[in-house]
Image (cartoon, rainbow, N blue to C red; front, side, top):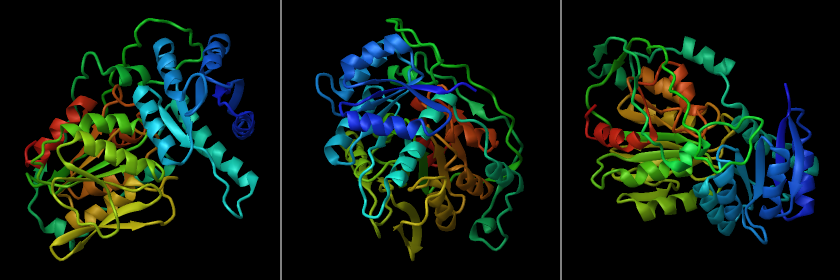
Length: 418
């Protein structure tokens, strides 16, 4: 298999050498060119046609945001990963770059006492290299662990409160795949699919999204009529822009809480919550230890902490922990979904949105078996169809819908409607 060809753009020669060294330690990656600023980057793009680009957030002459805007104008499908410092100012600019069309970001490694340079380089290779490969190569198939879980997952025990609730048997039906919007929002159209090897600059509009793929009908299952006590959202790559299409459109009288796991580091999650709060009629916060989970509130898992929920009498509260990462991430959606099953059983709506990897699959499978409906974002409107694609391929997605329909579906389900 040919190596993925990468352009590295950063005004620091030291950083460029570090990124090159980390990426080229992976036999699947190759740095074919470097540039000290955005202007030079545009020239290098014309010369070498890379498969992906790593771009610094803050640069002289032409900032990271300006560079992304220019790249999107001429190379609308080129995967772009921003390289950001882990501070509030850089996080703010990074979110702007994502809004301008960057696909994802990685924070620059910082020196920690006792951490060797080799360990720092290994982590950079895993984080940055993994995102580049995911964006260029696509999500791949279900992992062996996930396949085994889908096949052999145990049914809920009879003694659980959920099993005692009335259920309605339904016949298996094919997932409902709603038509994609025409045209899709420019940002998502521009980055919906990985770029091919040869990408020539062009002023033509972005390519049309790939046709939707219909999946096999889900297995026979039980569902609960009506009641919804919480909305649970799992999202990763492409999440900030996707959430900006959903959260501000939720009605101000939403009668259930919304809990969101977005894969992001500290500072970024708080800033993202603040951004959503400024656009939404709902209260949007970054969750803190012991916070009460209230109807009409959107709560984000904080960066580097798993978010779970726990019932204390009539109150449900947030529980944060720094247990080991799951699915190589912390926060992990699976942690929230498992705990939600203990608190609400199947009386929740699971929404799996754009994202790399398979986080949320096992948790969604568990809740699905308790009777919870699972909704997946469609492939055409996803930056990476990894997480939503995993639940679709597992046959547990009740509906597979475009991004611009998710808010309406969430609002209907919150009211107990289908």
